[in-house]
Image 1 (tube, helix red, strand yellow):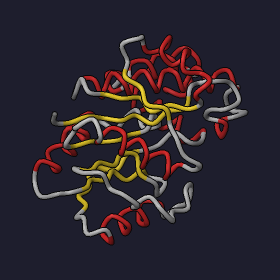
Image 2 (spheres, helix red, strand yellow):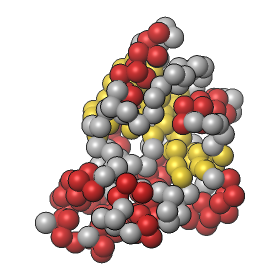
Image 3 (cartoon, one colour):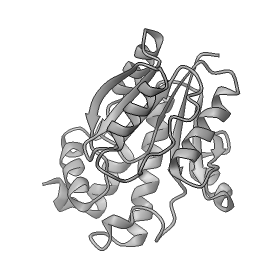
Length: 223
């Protein structure tokens, strides 16, 4: 086997996803937006490789994730006490299936082009042992490896402005050279959503489900 993708996601439920967008949008709208973001992420990944896994939480909503994405969607249940442990376990599970290059993304960067993911796999085909895509808020929206990375996710303060820097340092401390791809914006706060809306107004093909949701629910944000 060659390459695979993992999409880290929460099952969209009101009050549990995109809470920092409230009260700009309601908890119900946040869940609907998260559903659109997830569908676009799966579609984008599927255009690159059929070996796409959605690593989801919570486990009790497994049936809902399959209803949203179809029974044919490959899934992994997120296991771990924090984000780093959950990411590490998802990588370990996927590498155990025999894949040689794995790229992981979230669902919060709908305007990140598929080209960045394709470039990530190209870099892992070359001399890079790891690849990172920086999010504009200081985190990262993409990470990939050509072998199980072990403990590189330990000791990171998730949600801070220096997550990307700490992650890159951990990777390099493990003896892996890390390449980077273009920076992208994460939808965390209302200003992010408004900026993404303006981009999708001109380029709805980047994330059709998200563009459609924004047009229906926040038409002025696209002005």
